[in-house]
Length: 207
Image (tube, rainbow, N blue to C red; front, side, top):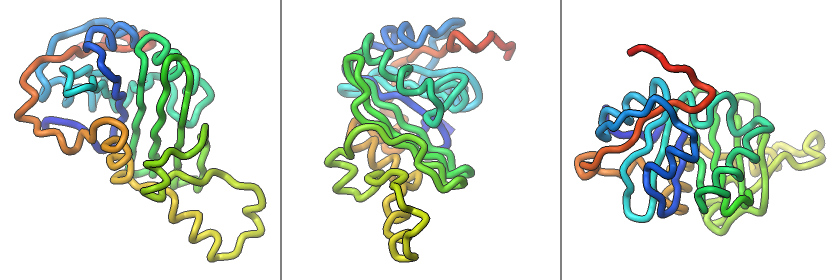
């Protein structure tokens, strides 16, 4: 199926060409691919940097965005911050239904401004950086981390806390607020080609 949104991870980069994003990601074994082919392949392997949409360039890869770790792990904040040092404003989004893994983050000019991640199967918020943004507050999601004293909470307090944890649809809502919700892209309107490639830590594979 053309397009992407659910069960994957992606970047939204403000006002940058696909080549600039591919360079910052260090992609090798590059190919120029159309939207349908590139997005489909990036669900299976590698990263596809799509042709720019108004104001934004999107890059996604289910396995390799980022490559070798995810938003719950220590390298993530530095990775996103370093990308933004080269690219300006960089946003990250991720959702995986089975582990209930949902994340979003924003960095600009080398500084991680905001990051949130929820792992439902573990009942944890392993990443909570910066203050909740007005969009999160308005939507009522991602606004609470792993607060002290949880072991003494009442059932009602736990219910209130869980009400702030996101679903995959909330990730799309956040993407739409901050940049572009990819689930709302009309695939037929993306006629320009993009760049597919592999991150530095990923070896070439035969197809």
